[in-house]
Length: 402
Image 1 (cartoon, rainbow, N blue to C red):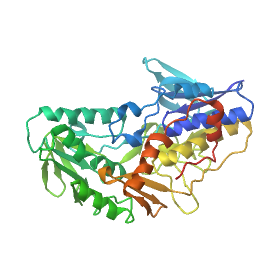
Image 2: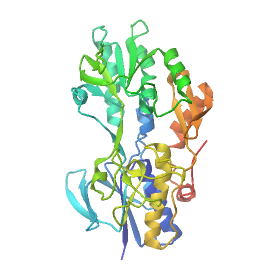
Image 3: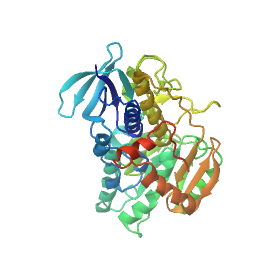
Image 4: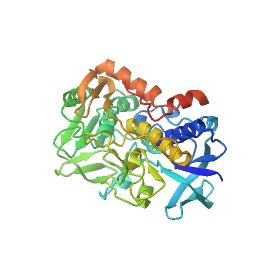
C-alpha cells in the first residue's frame, strides 16, 4: 500500500522538506511506494527576506519544475484543519472545493504571519512587508503619493518596530521617497521602537554601526516609544507625541501561522509547536513541525531556532528526511545548527555581518553588502530542477553558511 507524506506550505522549510523527503525515498529505492504531496496556494517560493526591496518580479520563483523533477506532487490549495486522531486533513482547493486527505506522516511548514495587536487604526491604516501582496500594496501607495498635495503627512514615513525587518525597511525609505517625490521634497523618516535601544534583539555588537547608518541616511529614531493609535493622517505614540504621516509601516512581531494551534502539545509565546530534535511534534504521533512553526534547540547551549530563513533551510531538510526515514526504516537525523550568523542590510550605508549568538561583527559597509546581495539573490533561491544536483544538497547535513 502506498504511504503518504503530506506537507503544508511551500516556503523555505516546506520546499526543502519536500526535496529532502524525495531524496530519502530515492535512497531507499521506494519511489513507487511513497507519495509526497505539498499543499500550498501556488507552486511558488516567496522570498520573504527581500520584501523590504522592490524587485518584486524576482521574489516569487516558480518551483513546479523543481518539484516535478524529484517526483513531488503539488496541490494548489490550503489545509484548513488537521485531525491527528484520524491522521487526515481538510483541504480547500483554489476553486473552493473541500476534500479530506489522509496521511502517514504530516509536516507542518506553514511559516509565520505578522502579529497585529489590538491597536486602534492599525489594521485599517497601516502597511507592512510581511507577504508579497503587502509589499506590493505598500509600493503602490508610496508611488501614488506623488499625485497628492505636498504636505508633512505625505512626506513622512513612520516604521513601527526596530527589529531586523524594521531596520532593513526603514533604511530603504529615504531614497525611495526621494525617487518618488523628488530631491526637492522635505522628507521625514522615523522609526519607533518600544525598547530603550534600537535593535533590542540584535545586541550591542552591531548597534553602533546601525546607529551610524541611521544618522548617515537621515532616519530619526524614537526609542521607548510605541504606537498607541494610527489613522490615515498620522500616528500617536505611547509617549504622547503625534507624528503626521500618511504612511505607517508595521514590522513588530511574527507569530506562527494559525494552523499550528491545531497541533496538540506545548506551544511557545510565538505559537510555535515544541518539537524534539528530530522535529517530531512532542504532543502527537506522526506529525513533524518545521520552519517558523517549530520551537526547537539549535545546539546544547540553550539557543533556540529563530523564525528566519537561515534556520528554515536546515529545519526543512531535517524534517523532510525524518518523515520519510520513519516510513522507510532509514536512520533518523537529529537537528543541530550550532553556527549562527546574521547579515543585516543597512540601506545605502551598506550592511553588517555578524557571527555567533552574541553577534560579533566580522564585516561591515560594502564588504558586508556584497555578501548580503549574494544571500538575497543567490543562496536562498531554489536550485535548478536537476534531480541529481538537488539531491546532492537536500541532505539533512547540508548547511549554507558564509
